[in-house]
Image 1: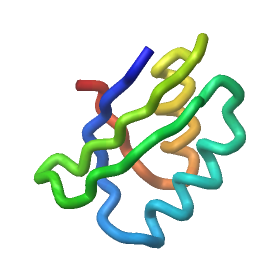
Image 2: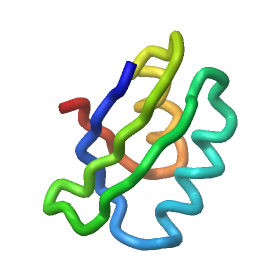
Image 3: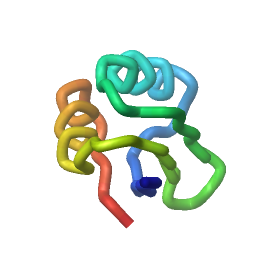
Image 4: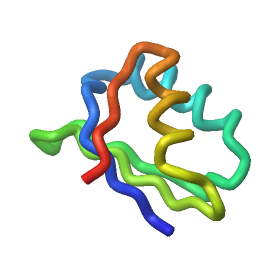
Length: 68
């Protein structure tokens, strides 16, 4: 399953912080962030991972995700 999220990430530091958090979630195959898109789109390919788990994990490190 592929999820797409609107984010509030804006820089390489944001990506590094979120990357470390995403590494902790079993079932994420790969992900990509497009910070040049106006909505800063984060695309995540997962196996058996609920969107809310990703949202809550990223929120813990200070970033917001909105499923689109």
